[in-house]
Image 1 (cartoon, rainbow, N blue to C red):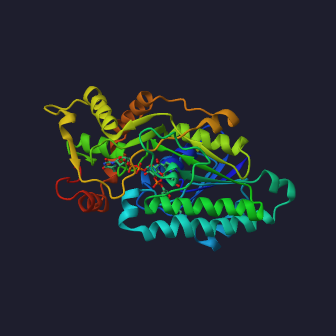
Image 2: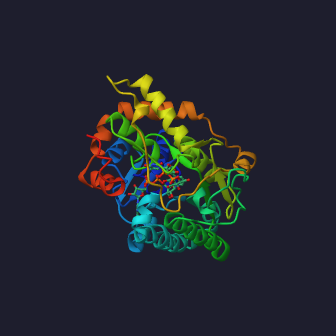
Image 3: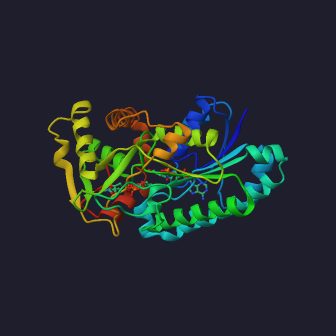
Length: 359
Ligand code: NAD
Ligand code: DAU
């Protein structure tokens, strides 16, 4: 059986990947996760139900721990999701992003290289290090610019994007210099089950259910290219199966929407699926101050992964968003458990007193 070492498998995309790997028989998984605020205990509990799954609480930057895990489980692939991932938090505390996304990835690469160099040559050939990155490394598009391609120059604008760009460059260098079989994926905005409600879609769902304001930055006309998380996870698996070492692959949903459109669609869905007495969800929409340096538009040209690896998304925005809303409605226990003092403190410090935590 294939053995994956997955980093950050307690977070949103990592957990969806691990669940699919275990339920669809992709392989056995060891999940290494630091359990930051973004790692929900209910998500880890869901994963514990499956056979062929192990969890280790630890930091990707802990070289002794990583070396020990690699020697013990001898994985066929490392799938590196672990990161600090929220742009707004990177504006407040960039150091955490530099530590995990840059230094943590550098330390992980160094230990993976040492492990890989000791493998017999047949296993060296099949080993893969898959680095999960973002479209934000390419910067911001104008309204009529063509979507990002793999050869679009890097122009990261937030501390988060800069830290991911730095890690992408390290991954590239470990392939070029040492021959480590690395592949990098640059994906657009994901949505779906198990996403921490600091990101746009789950934040809006949770706020709406609690009849609280839905805060839209600036004029609401910033554009993102939305992809259902399971489609992203299947793309990563396809890259592991068929991708060429040293290559990068853009992954996107071909689904550009303004933030206002996204929130209005969510309000319409909730109005039919979860009507509450005397509540018009649209009336909760509240325009707030803009994010500093807010990138105006992202869009991905995913033709390389479509043509070379035969991947394309299965969900439309309507089907994916409906599944997402249904998941949050049927996992109120998960939502309630997020409402820690830390979460309320984040909402209060970031949005100010006009936006109180859902209760
Ligand atoms: P997330 O914030 O939901 O989860 C991150 C996980 O990594 C958490 O479980 C956290 O505990 C863990 N982690 C953080 N620091 C760690 C460390 N030092 N060592 C071990 N574990 C650590 O993030 P996500 O949204 O699931 O994103 C996963 C990856 O995908 C990230 O690399 C992100 O940059 C990338 N990405 C995300 C999106 C998106 O829309 N969410 C889109 C494109 C790319
Ligand atoms: O593009 C991929 C990236 O998508 C990933 O690399 C990041 O990890 C992920 O967080 C996401 O970044 P964004 O900044 O695009 O996602 P976020 O959900 O934070 O915001 C989406 C859009 O919604 C963005 O234009 C900002 C806006 N927004 C966000 C929040 C949290 C609001 O208008 N109000 C909000 O309260």
